[in-house]
Amino acid sequence: MGRFGEKCTSFFNNRWLVFVAAMWVQSCGGIGYVFGSISPVIKSSLSYNQRQVASLGVAKDLGDSVGFLPGILSDFLPLWGVLLIGAIQNMIGYGWVWLVVTGRTPVLPLWAMCILIFVGTNGETYFNTAALVSCVQNFPKNRGPVVGILKGFAGLSGAILTQIYALLHSPDQASLIFMVAVGPGIVAISLMFVIRPVGGHRQIRSSDGFSFSIIYGVCLILAAYLMGVMLVQDLVYVSETVITIFTLILFVLLLFPIVIPITLNFFRDPKSPAEEALLSPDKQESSKPEDDPQDIIFSEIEDEKPKEVDILPASERQKRMARLQSRIAQAAAEGAVRIKKRRPHRGEDFNMMEALIKADLWLIFFSLMLGSGSGLTVIDNLGQMSESLGYDNTHVFVSMISIFNFLGRIGGGYFSERVVSDYAYPRPIAMAVAQVFLAIGHFLFAMGWPGSMYIGTLLVGLGYGAHWAIVPAAASELFGLKKFAALYNFLTLANPAGSLIMSGVLASSIYDREAEKQAHGQNYIHRGISFSFPSFLRAEESLKCKGTICFFVTSLTLSGLCVVAVILSLILVHRTKPVYRNLYGTSRR
Image 1 (cartoon, rainbow, N blue to C red):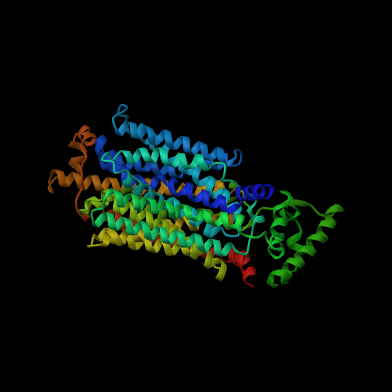
Image 2: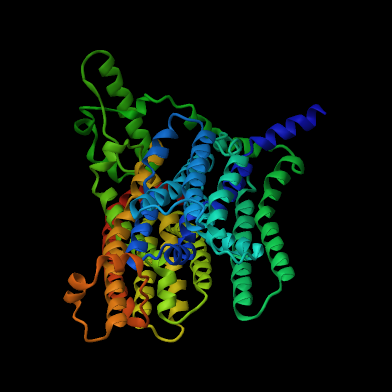
């Protein structure tokens, strides 16, 4: 019994259990990705026009991205407290929206609805922060795959929640809002004591590569399965029994990764001495005090360092620098030199203020704002985009972009990891490739050719998703793990910043203008609309636009902005080549 108790304790403290639990939270925590499905319900129930729906979309994007508070709280609260706050916010925000839409409470003004959407969606940032902080600390040597998989499941949550909604078979479309309000919170609360740092750097095994391969295999099967189910349900009539079977298979696939920590704890022998030897560098690293001598530079070190040191191999350079530091440390002890705290270099731990003065951080931010912001604009307006082109079932495209968003995150994490580990090349090159996908996808949306809606959704989903696997990993490499939560949540502000301009101003204004033209005749003067059309009718009438003209200018503009994002990413690649050579070049040798 004592042996079994030890096994159970080891199981509860296994980093793979934490990782799997974080995947489950993320799989229903990407609340913002369901907005494309619930926005038509809100629009029709409350008689909103597209500009008002876009305002709700911007509030959703702000809630999805303003994560400073969970970033700060993660330094003071246990991660279960962070998850609990997120669950409460999610239930209050979307629960109240559901009450308003179903007429159970009085209709609120638009600004109040924006606040509710913001509060409800902001719960997602608490789920994200807890999942990423715990798993990046538990898997410090596998940041790309871990971030990609976790962010991928967040992106897939739209398709998962849509499939569960199909199982409910409710004629009341507002029940999807209720499910969004209750489901993620229940999952987060049930797993909040599991998701935490567990000293993962001391749990390295030779089988880790195989375990990641299993996770990747499950991810690909899950994406292919959801795509197949979605197509079947869209093309043919499916009975309620078949939908139930589809959903049960979905749950089996989601639960399957728990096999990894169970097998490692209950069906594997303890780690061999050879595997224990792998831990020695990490143990030393983890025991390093905060004011380690390595964090101190001597004021005279640049004068003392011979010039030929910089061109020596890494191992020899480290030995020479260690001897030099030892000599100067002795001189410092005798009072011959001054010692001062040095500023961190890229690849080391930065605090927030130190990172904010670095050009690299702002290159990441603006590239992310243009690339990811354009993808988010499509996600927010996908229901209206598909309706304008004559598609009736908008849930198909919401599920599609969710699935390819997932694959983009998985693929972005995997391929960017191959780039840095195999070639010691900067990770942001993968972000530039993702932005090329986005530019092509937006162009296809603008053209409105037959089938282009499907291909454009695929490309935008892949490109948008890849950003959220690449950017967190790149930020942790360039600016360290010490303040990762704060840095990550700062960079997520690029999303609502881009969406505010591209969706809240550009897309909604053009859509409403074209809808009013179609409603009042092609010869109606635009300027006359804005002054003579009664404002109260604007609020009450839900105008719809039909045809490629509705998003033509918007999509072309977004395509051009993605080209600018590619240029910014390539500048970042050029600037960070020495950093990645230093981080990964030694391991390649």
